[in-house]
Amino acid sequence: MSDFKKFASSVKKKKFGRIYLIHGNEDYFIENAVGLLIDNVVSENDRSFNLDVFDGTESNSDNVLSSILSFPFVGEHRLTVVRKFDKMEKRYRLDIVRHLPEVPESNIVCLVAGEIKTTDDSYSQLPSFAESLTFNKLKGEELTGFLTTTSASLGKEMEPGAVELLVELSGDSLGDLVSEVEKLSLYAGDKDRISVDDVNTVVGKSRTFNIFELQRAIGQKNSKRSQEIAGKMLETGEKPVYINFMLTRYFLSLMQVKHQLGKGINTKEICTKVFGRWNPYVDEYVTAARAYSIPELRRAIAVLLDADVKLKSGGYKDADAVVLSLSEILGADSAGNA
Image 1 (tube, rainbow, N blue to C red):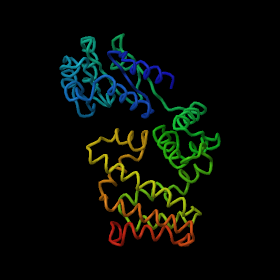
Image 2: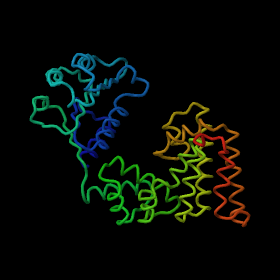
Image 3: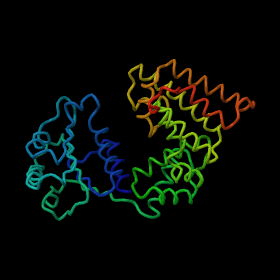
């Protein structure tokens, strides 16, 4: 992890190496490293000219060499990324490696691989100025410490037992674990701490029937699935007031996303403008916002606000509030009812 921090710091300061070999069994760090290079080496406006990304299983050395030996067009740097370099035919790998000393100083080459034997000719013959970065899965205290730090960056403190339970339930894939921490942060709402109970609710056995799955079903306009999930949540003791509050917030966010889409704003900017930070559900929000018209979104918000008043005043029985609201929002003709 320290190697990743050093790499990230250098790249963000625009201090680039010429040749990178990025490899290992932890896709989370590998993908983030490649993403950092792309974001910092080539501007968005220049990427159609100065960025080439190859799949090693589908490419030969001629195609790759044409890219890495060509000078940048207009921009300062040219970046060539070869994914699955370890899956490329060995003769192509050796051909590429032999020509790496010829790469112009303006160009940057990133070779991406899984677990490799560095004694293989394809890697042992890399030029001396190449940087080899190995990113393998975190274990033990290093893993739990990373998750604790990730949670803190989202403004939440994770109880020690919650971190350990998360790893037990989700495995050691860092990408999956970070995604779960982001979900837990959203679930915690205004709370400062993520508890063991939060992990059990969001990640544990009830993960199929939680607020995020309910929002997904509603976003798809799937009335039958929405009612099923809501019913299971109520059976397991979830508070109707909480469900109503989360759904109101969901539709208010959809309305904001809808307006941003109308302005032609891209996904990254939508995250900043609507959520204030990266949201792991942003693609689902965008899809749902496109599925609903503005009048439908306004009606859904009105239904949920009315339900909130009735729940707090006794106008609705707790068990009926969510079911009736979903029926009004989705109706009987929504997808999934056939």
